[in-house]
Image (cartoon, rainbow, N blue to C red):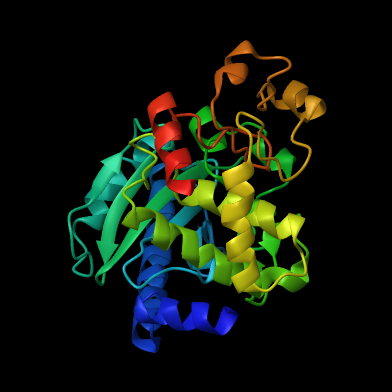
Length: 322
């Protein structure tokens, strides 16, 4: 069954070829160079003395389906820019887009969306769509080995920065060496990584065929489906990918909502007090009790990734599983 599943996914063109992979790598390298150039220019504006030849100020991290190696050829790349303290969010969403528009390798319009719940710059480089997020850290330069999941790194980070999807940036084994893919996969035993990655490709392909794939419309999106897949892998850690797919639909056909999907213990009172942030907790926060289909992100601060599911969309999704 697993072999048949793999063959079907290939027929659906869900695997990217060598040429496409190289184009993505080149696009990311360009974005990394541009971000660094901008950060160096910002330092010069502020009169900071930095040895640009030896000191790299910024770091770029990918996450989501690309980092897991389960992206389709047309998928965008979720990317996070980690910048030092002298780089402001205002500058990133004003002067940096202006710089991007001057680059010949940018092959589509640059859209800066600073007022989104998670602010983002959307651009296309060498034909590759990229969503670029931004966080300023309280450091003079961002070390290459920084642990983005260490709660202490959130100290003095502004609220939009805290909302950046850190759950997608966990070091795990998902069939790729030294992968930094997503905290939603940390609790899953490492030896099932490649099987999980195969399983992670499938629901996001099947569900849109039924017209029920969209966070904006009140259904579920990529993060939601990834967490759901991870939970099934926790429940059946020794199953092959084909079996995992069958179990996936069986588990969620029988699931009684609003019982939450939890990959770990998300309550972190000490961190809440230290950083002044709140994690999802229906025992404490009445608004959390109103959520209809809670699918909880595992990294601090834990959030309900499916907060916009409505009665009508939940009923539609349940009907599809009948």
